[in-house]
Amino acid sequence: MDSASGAGDVVNTASEAITVEELSYTYPDGTVALQSLSFRIHVGECFGLIGPNGAGKSTLLLLLNGVIEGPGRVWLLGQSLALFNEQKLPRRMSMVFENPDDQLFMSTVFDDVAFGALNLGLDDNTVRQRVQAALEAVGMEDFAAKPPYHLSLGEKKRVALATVLVMDCEIIALDEPTNGLDPAGREEFIQLLDSLPMTKIIAAHDMELIEQLCDRVAVLDEGKIAAVGPASDILGDEELLRDHKLRCPLTYHRVAKLGG
Ligand SMILES: Nc1ncnc2c1ncn2[C@@H]1O[C@H](COP(=O)(O)OP(=O)(O)OP(=O)(O)O)[C@@H](O)[C@H]1O
Ligand SMILES: [Mg+2]
Image 1 (spheres, rainbow, N blue to C red):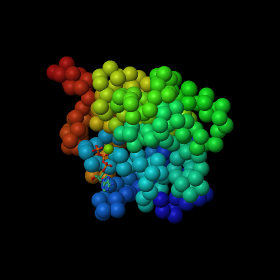
Image 2: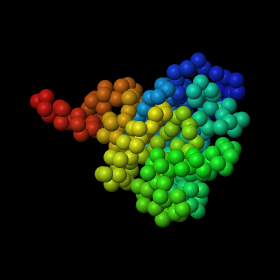
Image 3: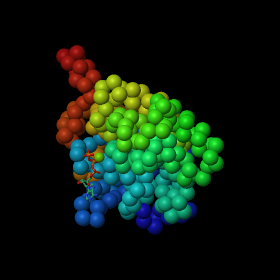
Image 4: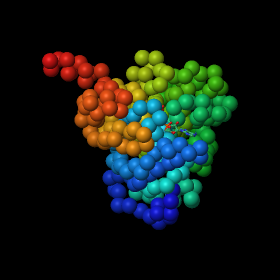
């Protein structure tokens, strides 16, 4: 982040979970991934990010989570992200990566989930309680002793979510959370996400997931926001979606057909 979002820089955002102003990112090889994005996500909101391959969705989530840094200003719950990064403050936002193998690296499920809680400096008892609660929340409490690399993709995705829940962050970001899940597992995972009360930002090609969970949606294309608005407006705009290589959720097609 540039110096404009440095320490002490606070915006008046009692109701804003994420505030982004003119955020850009260019990869070291010169690929321009994001170009001067500005948007706001309200506290408690579930915000969807849709867009074609290469639009910049994953890059944006990495920036918001401080994994990479680029020019622009970002505030999380009114505090500048630069301040979090500079002072290594406890994270108030965490991310579930698209590929759980990027998230799970310890020798047991328990250790992977405990890792984030230990990093918060919690005592052993609290860590144990938090790990148990996080594993129960995702239905994986019987897998604590297993090595993560012995799990199926769906199981790994649940554990990856537990590694984030254990930190009790106010905001979570999820990149393609339903990718690779079977229909029943996908539906269960959507219900699980729906039950989480924190602010969520979800990047996905799964339009039905976006429809089921998101209050507002942004269309990202070529590193810019092409449209942002209530989910029903964006997801019902067939022309907008087609222009950005997307499609309406299936229920919208059915409604359109019924309407003649
Ligand atoms: N490590 C990297 N180095 C160089 N360019 C990259 C790197 N990672 C991503 N990019 C490029 O940045 C752009 C945005 O990629 P990103 O992964 O953010 O898109 P996305 O919207 O998440 O796409 P998808 O829908 O395929 O997941 C693309 O042009 C991509 O090729
Ligand atoms: Mg992506």
